[in-house]
Structure formats: C-alpha cells, structure tokens
Length: 274
Ligand SMILES: O=C(O)[C@H](O)[C@@H](O)[C@H](O)[C@H](O)COP(=O)(O)O
Image (tube, rainbow, N blue to C red; front, top):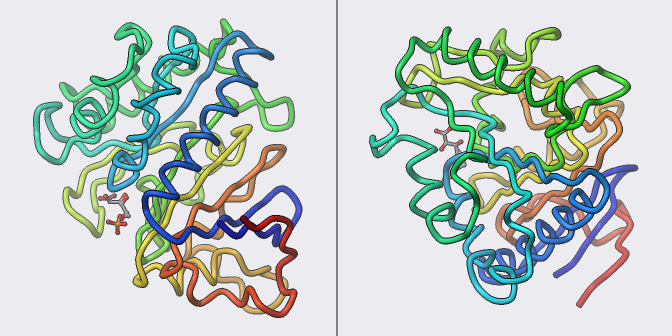
C-alpha cells in the first residue's frame, strides 16, 4: 500500500489488490471502533450500499470477529433506496447478508430506514431517530455544527462523483439544516432514495470513501484536487464537497481508481509505503 497526505485532515491509500484493500479497511475500522468505544463507550457507524459492503468481509473473520467489542456497535445507513427490505436493491438487505448476519452486532443496535412509509416520511422518521440518539449521546454531537458526529461514515463513490445519494448538481447538496433528506429523481435507479445531507457527512469524526475501477479515476482526481487551483467543480462533484469539519477523511483506492492522480512528483506527500 502507498499512502499520501494531500492536505490537512485527509489521506489517500492506494492498494495493489482488492484483498489488500479489504484487509487494510478492516484494520482501519477496527482502530476507529476501538478509539470510539474507549472515548465514548459507543461506536456509531453509518454504511452505504454498493460494492462497499463486500469490502467489510475481513471484519467477519479472525481476529476481528473475536477482538472487536461488537456489543458497542450501532449501525446506521448514510443512504437507502426506497424499496422493501427484502428487495434486491435494498442497502439493508445487502448489508444484512454480506456483513450483519456474520458478526454479533445486536439487532436492537441496527437502525435501518423505514421501508413502510413514503420517502418523505422515512427521511423525517430517520432524522427523528438520530436526534433521539444524539440526545442520549449514543451518537456524538459536533460542537462546531450541532450536527450528529458519527464515529465513522463509510461511503462509496460513483463515476459521476456521487456519494451516499447526493448526486451532481442536485438541490439536496444545498441543504444546510436538514440532517436526512430524500430525493425522487435519482439519475440511477431506483429514483426514490433517502440520504444523509452534507452537513451530517462532514461533521463525522471519520469519513472513508472507497473507490475502485478506472471509471472512477477522473472523479477521484477532481475530488482530491484543491479547488483553489482552478474552477470550482464542487456542485458537479459531490465527493469534492466531502470535507470534514473537525474529523479526518481517508480515501481507499485501487490502482485503477488512483490512475489519474499525479503521485510521483511530490504533489502529494507520501508518508508510508509497505
Ligand atoms: O447509489 C447507488 O445506486 C450505487 O450503488 C452507488 O452508491 C455505488 O456505491 C457507487 O456507484 C459505486 O459503485 P461501483 O463501484 O459499482 O460503481
């Protein structure tokens, strides 16, 4: 793995293989969870759908299945598709089958999004649930933004640069006060989705964005570039708007997704290679 620190509070990790990436991701999540449990007594993690879930596979194996304090884990979703929980498109179903059914997380700690309401009501309900858990500090709170401060938010990224269900140039990107919102016009099916807003994503203690494949190379390149260098591509590239307020952002990339990054001439400060 090669690791770079392009700017303060962010790091880029580049992997030779998907196996190496899954191994490092498991170690990263394990470390973040241990720190959170030690500092707060809880580990509140928000997941997304897509290929990301399969990258959690190493957490289901030794040593993590035995060493992690699973009873302190609380699971949330940064986005969900408005389909029934047993539908093939459900992020909940994907996560349940690929991860939750394989580790001893308490089912009462799994906060899935209501699939039995309109998207609007499901978004309102989910924000309410999060507000209750912030009140009792199962989820932390950001002193700078008053938003929930998830210990970790894991995101995938589409080749268009979307993260969670925040798509390029969508008005949902502009929301400042809502924590959870809904869209009915997703450019990718299904059209109706529920999603965290940017203020919530950016208030997290830790954010990890996973991207694999050459189709992500341009979006990755633009997302990690400093916007002061050129035209502001922000709204057309939601991943570029992921900028932690007080936390840390780590990119997990395979070589193909990193192939447009100029990592050779000191553009990024490399601090570790093994
Ligand atoms: O929102 C969705 O419908 C997608 O599932 C999406 O969130 C996915 O995670 C990314 O598009 C990355 O997926 P790929 O790496 O397969 O492009």
